[in-house]
Image (cartoon, rainbow, N blue to C red; front, side, top):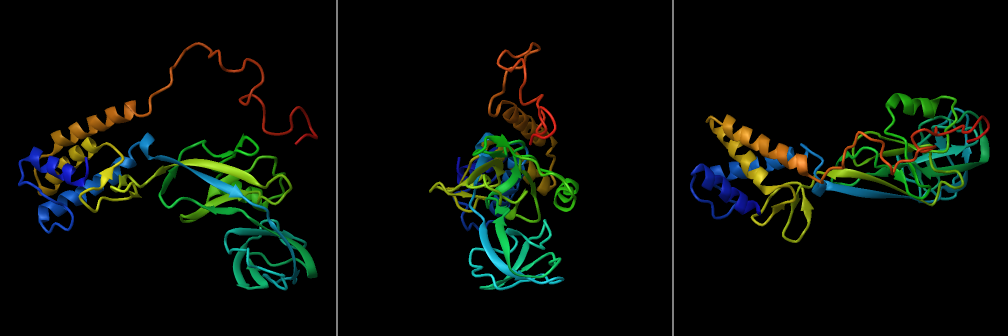
Length: 313
């Protein structure tokens, strides 16, 4: 069902005047119906991790920028860098002599200078510096992460996270061993907010392919197949269940008009509950030990580090 068909189903089931189009329709009721369709779609896609709204995103980690620059004690400006063209503010961390471990680039001043968020602890001309990208964009249609889908495909291990702000600061600001596995968290506003720790600067950190899955907020598809966040023209179609939108719009319209809507709302909630219950299928549950699981050592009973004893990573 497209946007027009959904609006027609709503008015037909409620006994309202027929609708022949919705694009740029000036009729107050039609405009209200379409506003409620969009309200319902926005609410419905967030009600469940619908399989048709699940997407994945690839993060490709490239090599860091090995360069030199002049650092001055007490100054947050690094000068005389041969070339800053590949460095982007708020995306890159910096390491080097007399640079605090957690320092990051907050401004690219010009072709040879950057500002960092920590002043240098001493002065040096021609200090060896490494700029590495630790922050990455998330997709424009991102709504929320699907838990435990963050993996390092190159090294074939799961990323650790999302870590809390407290753990992240402990890692960045304390005296700790980072370990072999990478941590991540969401920092600040989308879309520049997916940050790694430690910054991928060591040999073996790159090139690397990371992945995570998420729920898309683009619950509408145009006739050309382009995903979008709301219905705007007659031919737009929902990627989530259209009948749920009809049921949701009916009770919301009756609520807005001041009519009794409880029965229609209950019908909608029951329908959505049934949709969610069968969405994507379900694994078999057994009270016996699954024969496909390892009986001896496996990922559930081997710690991340220091195995089998001290001195091992």
